[in-house]
Amino acid sequence: MSFVSTGFVFFCALVAVAYYLVPKKIKWIVLLFASYVFYALNNVKAIIFIFLSTLVSYLSAVNISKISDTYDGKLETIEDKTERKNLKKECKSKKKLIAGLGLSFCFGILVIAKYTNFFISNINNFIPEHAKLPWYITFIGLVFYSIKLYADFSGGMDVVIGVSELVGIKLSENFRQPFFSQSISEFWRRWHITLGTWMKDYIFYPFSLSKFASNMGKSISKVNKYAGKIIPMCIANLLVFFVVGVWHGAEWHFIVYGLYNGFLIVLGIVFKPVSEKIIDIFHIDVKNKWYKIFRILRTFLLINIGWVFDEVNDLGQSLSMLKQLFRFNTGNLISNWKFDTFSELTIYTVILFCLIWFITSVLKEKNVDIRKKIGSLALPIRWIIYLALILSVPFFQAANMAGFIYAQF
Amino acid sequence: MNELLDILKELKPDVNFSSEKSLIDNAILDSFDIVQLVTQLKDTFDIDITPAELIPENFNSAEAMWNMIQKLQ
Figure (spheres, rainbow over the protein chains, first blue to last red):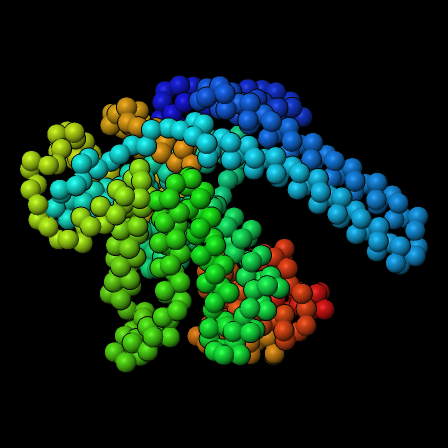
């Protein structure tokens, strides 16, 4: 069920009503049931996987908590220090075993479901026949892909966040105006924030603070102090972006997409002393507005070039698009570009919404809470704005457009 | 505490660590800074900082870091 379908609006309304009607004790059952129904409406087969992973997670958690309780009881009766230590160790390893089994099962399901083309969905190929296009059209196509992906993903997340708030659940923000980032690493802290945080907590920190990494750092430090400091971090960073690539799907171009971002960040770290020197020599004021704008544009350019590894079907296509971009061929615009796939209205709508979007993003950057601002307006004005926004959805036929791209990841 | 402030000063000379209270929330320290910092704290104070300790509450201010170090010692 698409987030922008009428069905979804009714579904949410129904869930919210049911949620507030039932007693507090069983509210969670309503939400759990509604979640299953939502996924079942998308794909009935998927429900088996979701049900199994819920069951395994639940049983693992119950078992771990039981083990904790039993050992806590045993520990109370024992005074001897070494015996206590051994018992604690035993408890920990038992819990680890259960957690490990549960995780393996869930990851197994993920591998089956995600990486064996189980519910492969159509990848919407945005740029048609880019083989002979002039470079700037390819670039414009990539910029449009940015717009589409960002609108799709952050818009979809806004729907999810809003629906959750309807039943009193506050989800964390997933985007913070990513295209105003001044570096690739900053971009990844502002784009798909929950994924980045997960990668940081479960891959970056555990690896870069492991004994292995610190020993490696120490032995490299003997040769070169700066290298010893940065190499373990760079490896951890590449590892993160390799996993980011795999997370997108089991395709080579996704892995290259991850590593492209990872390598750009590594280059930034390796050449930091050089860039600091350049800033010093040319007396560049890093707090200058124009310098910041230069950095934002540079990051935007690199992110958009990176999409060639993301929005394609295979690596060959990525490479041909890259060639397209850097050959600076002016090509034959009219005969190759299928401009007629877009109506004029669509193009004006996109431009209009990008403008609104840009203005609201700038306001958000300046810490203006637009939602609060609208909420504090006089009632009639406030409701005129609400109704206009609600009616603009069917008016611009958002419901007829493609489904949520990110759902496939 | 002074030892900690020296380490922080060396890591980011342009930040006032004795007054700043949202080092993580305001993204003054990023994950690369944290790794460098933690590696140094481990060696200097002879403590074991695990990824479980790497939460914003422990790193938002020099004071919070100092409390964490004392707890781990």
